[in-house]
Amino acid sequence: MAEVLWDWSKSGTRNAVRNRLLRRLPGVSVASAYRFGLVERPHYAYGVRRATELAARLGHRGVTVVEFGVAGGNGLLALAEHAQYYATATGVAVRVVGFDSGVGMPPAGDLRDVPYLYGPGFYTMDHERLRARLGAAELVIGDIAETLPHYLDARSDLLRDHPVGFVCLDLDYYSSTTTALDLFRGPEHEHLLPRVTCYLDDLPGTIEQIGEAAAVTDFNAAHPDRPIGRVLGLRAFTPFDPPWADQIYAHHRLDHPDYARLETGATGDQLPLDD
Ligand SMILES: C[S@@+](CC[C@H](N)C(=O)[O-])C[C@H]1O[C@@H](n2cnc3c(N)ncnc32)[C@H](O)[C@@H]1O
Image (cartoon, rainbow, N blue to C red):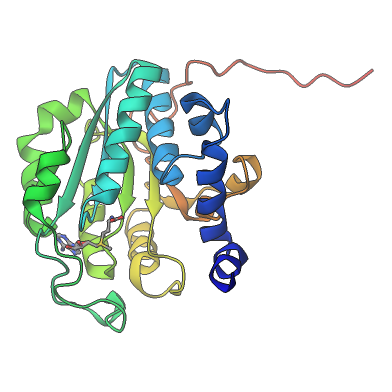
């Protein structure tokens, strides 16, 4: 009983347990589970939904979603499942890509890497087990300082047809996150949607000046026309008020040629004075 109470006392675990219970109720369809965020890793589902919606509204037929930091692979498989659902629901093809060293955390390179919590060799991967379940999802193995620039170069055609619309940052370190944000740094735009939803996994329990938060602050200081900011007020319009909403950010690429394009579905609403 004490364990159950412990789980229900914290909003993160309470929400996960409640979601699992609600999902089992008769009449809760797969579509309802997605609509109300009752699926596993609802924050990943949210990111895929936002990416596919924006891609469709801007007339793209495909989009790419990325997990930086894969470890055992549970997140990547969840992302792939959500990608399949939203590809069917929206008609937008969704490519899924995971980046990881494959051998766990590298040595910390900076005191802001939260070295008192994470260390070299944490979170290794069982490649064979994961690859057997990957399906069409792509797994890019190696230090992202090498694999990311190579990937952007080698896959530029695919990325042009499937620009990145959602990124999960789960590399734990300030230095690795800074490297991952190179995705947003170069002069090219075609590999990205003008607004990219980001989920920052490792914010809770840290402070603004270290870890992922510090990497984002530094990025913003260096790129004022490409801010990465927390999506304000998201909890209030997300079903069941989930705590993960506080970890949803968006990369707004103000210098992207499509940034100001009116999205299909923008209705030109009016707000006339009430009688
Ligand atoms: C916390 S784990 C990811 C967990 C995973 N997203 C999940 O939800 O199950 C962090 C991962 O980041 C990877 N990582 C950290 N720095 C890296 C780097 N510079 N290059 C490649 N992988 C890195 C590590 O190998 C580790 O597996």
